[in-house]
Amino acid sequence: MNFIVIGCGRVGSELAFGLYKNGHKVTVIDSHLEAFESLDPDFRGRTLEGDALTEGVLERAGIAEADGLASVTNSDTSNAVTAHIARTIYKVPIVVARNYDPAMRPMMEVFGLQLVSSPSWGAQRIQELLIDPVFRTVFSAGNGEVEVYEMRIPSCWNAKPLAGLLRTAPECLAVALTRAGCAMLPTPDTILQEGDLLNVSATFNGIQKLRACLDEKEEA
Image (cartoon, rainbow, N blue to C red; front, top):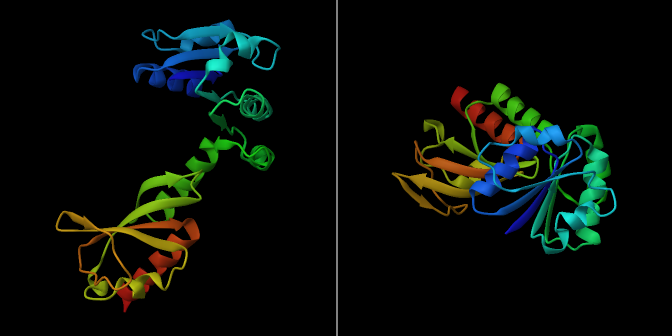
């Protein structure tokens, strides 16, 4: 596949090399020539000096044939505008924009862009580790608004139905249960056993309610 990466900072250089290592054709755009020095020495993609918003730069990068574009500069405005142009004017099938400043997320979301906000995601993940280290996050969707957690069923919920546990946390949805190394799709009637590994999809508030329910049961 053909990809364009706009911005060759820490994120852009790592992304470009990762795509290249996976066998894709990559063109990296940056307005500063020295930025390309951060690319891995083994990178064999194409580099293009210039401002992506300047007329002709995206065309020279081959945007007409691009399968995907990622705008990952440290300017949210530039990322939003470039990604919007790629999606609406050039009809690039896959467009992703980096969000650098969480305060700018609402503005970028107005464009309907697929965003990756590392500050928001990072803050959310650190909060989880500080407040609730018992639940292990195994998958994060969006920017951490919904995540899949893995939890071990404690003795206080042994031989009880799954429905009773999830009734306390409506923002949680059971997606898998692993018992003795075998995974299954649980139903509300599934009887839990101590030591089961339960995967739940939940918001942060939902997982906090579920954790509070378990704490109350253990104390009882």
